[in-house]
Length: 122
Image 1: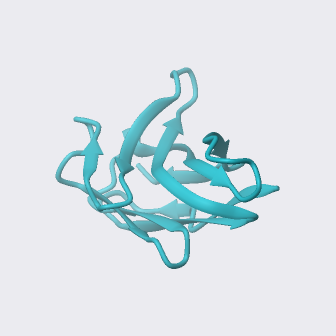
Image 2: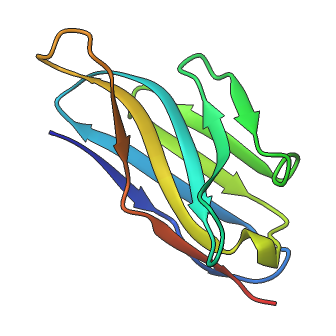
């Protein structure tokens, strides 16, 4: 009933910028935490950044100071602004959200987007 739809991935030059978006849709009562993860070839999936409904944030050390996560609660959308991109940032980026669907009490479920590819020229 709930879907996460990602957009904004693509090819970017070394040192460039890219902005990812992820919109939650469907029968939603409330969206709690939202986050971005990434998985590079030969690497484990890692948490990149997360944001609470009130705007509190946490970042992986590898992206601190370069990436900014934000959200629009009215649109149930989370963004990831990526600046000063490096080859190590190339990966498939996955959106994640903790959602309380409408009609199931107050039970929280975890949902994932299908991933969007980010490629950095080197």
